[in-house]
Length: 374
Image 1: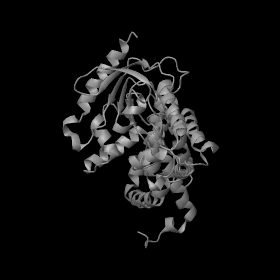
Image 2: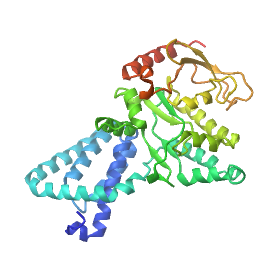
Image 3: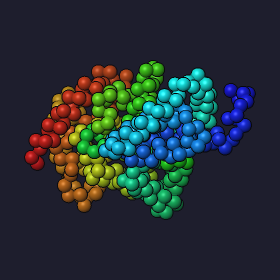
């Protein structure tokens, strides 16, 4: 491919514009399911870039189709109809010149995919104001001068150098899946990386089909397709580190830092996500919820509701002076179910749950939440 010569390779500026346009498309595709207005803005930027260069192309036609869909989601029916008409007209023109345009599109797509891969892998998608503020809260703690010196200084510098990784666009009032912290991806080092749970599951489904096993494929095999858009994902710490033992060892030196980080996470769960079913998918993180009597942390008061699994119903907060966020007098999670599900791999096949199990749990959680009297 690198040895081929042609007009696209001779025109650097044209190639740059096509690459940027493709990045806008990928960002818009990720945004479309949870923020149609943001997706619309990205699709329009792509169209504005491509129209002067290739007013009739397969890529532009596909963007018009996607734009019509996000306009429909916003109730902009008249604009959607106009866009769909433009799309249909372009498809007719393309049918007349399909052989030539097909060759051009295939060549250009292969080139731009190759050129933008490393760039796009490190580009954070556009986020809502809520998600932006949440990220800034974590960043403010991470970059606080309180942690720039002393025993914790080296760990603080390391976390800052890697950036934070945050799941954005989380749905409200459904299922919450939690981990302890995101694993390191060297492609994202130094970048504050945002992603959506739905997109992670799309990639995981593809990996499952290819026989791959990783962190996200276990999550996909747990949830399946039915509840992806009702599931929020949140790591207790958005700090990038692959080995949990080493991660915990670095945090051990500063209790205050952990306290500030977990406090932000709890407020996000209590004040925004408000799930009916929580699945704690990391065994070592269970004590942060207050499950252990000698470690209050978030301090939830829970009662076990199932004999054959670690399933509890949250009754409120414990009356303990060392509880995080003591200004939260009542919990929005009262009546919600919480499952401590750390045994989620092939080492414990007898403990594995599957989508049918989650469906039953979720239905039960919604029922118990609606019947909660306090």
